[in-house]
Image (tube, rainbow over all chains, first blue to last red; front, side):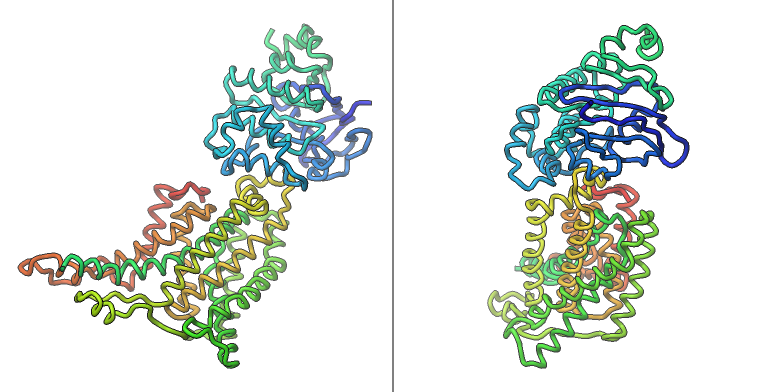
Amino acid sequence: MPFFSGDNMTGGYGGADIINSCTINVNRGEIVTILGPNGAGKSTAMKAMLGLLNLKSGKISIDGKDISKLTPQDRVKEGISFVPQSRNVFTGLSVLENLEMGAFLREERIEEIIEEIFALFPILKEKKAQIVGELSGGQRQQVALGRALMTKPSVLMLDEPTAGVSPIVMDELFDHILKVKKTNVAIIMVEQNAKQALSIADRGYVLVTGENKFSGTGKELLNDPEVRRSFLGG
Amino acid sequence: MDIINAIVLLLNYIFVPALSYGSQLALGAIFVSLIYGILRFAYFTAGDLMSFGTMFTILFTWYFQSLGISLGIFPTALLAIPFAIIITTLYVLLKDKLVFSYYRTKKSPPVQLAMVSIGTMFVTQAIVRIIIGPFDRRFFDGEKFILKANEFKEMTGLNEGLTIKSTQVITLLVTIIVVSILFWFLNKTKTGKSMRAYSDNEDLALLSGIDPKKVVMITWVIAAILATIGGALYGLDKSFKPFTYFNNMLPIFAAAIVGGIGNPFGAFLGGYVIAFSEILVTYAYRKFFIYLLPESIEPDGLLQLLSTDYKFAVSFSILVVVLLFRPSGIFKGKVL
């Protein structure tokens, strides 16, 4: 049984269903990427797993525990952390304050966790007193990742972490995501840069109109002629 | 000597009064800015909340005076302020529970909340007028002057006197203390940081587990504290008249917007920007130039840019100019 799963999720934001019996699961120490054309419901599927929309049917569970009825805040307490696509940092706060806010619910001393984050993202240590609004796009994404990791999550969900950053920064970010994976965190990410995402992902799901169309290991999907033709540009 | 006389003149009629008036505006502007940043609406009850707090300061001052309690050379009102703060805090929390929380849970647009705050403004005004009436009241007691004009003249041998009222010094000292504590709270404590985080990015704050109810409650408590202190200081320095407090809303909002609404530090400085502009523009410079210019070209008129009756036009103009050319304010607050 997978560590974190959303089974047969159906639902939307009130109107028509955006996702239809969509199933996504991930294990610890694994990167799973959700791909698909625009409007396929990639982000929606991820938000459903976080509890940001009401599902008509389907079940979300983590470590065997059913969390379908929990609010997003309570799911965060269960060990799920989410990095939104945009507005994913506190731009008016310093790097250090962003990390502290990430650990808001932790009562114990958080210095150790902050040191771990600094070890993962050395640039943040250098810039810890700087206001996040003054950092570059790539550095901001690292702050966003760092903030999300402050809860010591077992599941990390990333909504298009590389949107709007340069190819060099994108490679760097993927390196960081691989480092996070090595800390035994289950990672789900929605990505537009399908080829690069599949090259670091263990598995991938291709969604079309809210349904699972293809799924498999990163290699399988990369080599699948139909997937290549429709989503990877030949 | 004439240059020194001219400088003393400006110190006496512009610098000292603007510094204390600016502090009083700053206290108001800070809480308007905080409410805008965290509750996300323009709080039009601001001026009348200050009058509410001042009213209770006066009532407690009377009560203490009737008991024969006084602070000697200091105004009794200083003793009354903490009690007035408690009542004002209860009032804003009750108002939030009865009125604002309903619109907040409904996720009403900010404009609707601003309209609601106009409603609570009328209610607050009515309460103040029912309890204490619309008249002008002075509640200052204790030693009035720290430095009298005559004493200064004797000391220095200058023609111009410098008057420093004790309320001006009290205003400045209290403002420095209150504002330092507030900024220490916002920048150094976990709760203060969570309030800034909530103001910065509400969704992310919720995802991080920050409790919106607590943030909102603390915002109201800070608003009540600042409103009572700012209002009481203004009343001590000048006088308490409910209508004046209502009018002060314009310079207070101008200060908050000049500083960048949602940014408390900007609002703090904005208070002084507005106070200095208002007094600089409405001051009659005739005497100043008499000291500086040779007798042959002495000015005839008052050399006043704008009559004091129009002092609100200054805040209003600043408000319009800032909103047109730099809507985010000096310190990059939120754009209205």
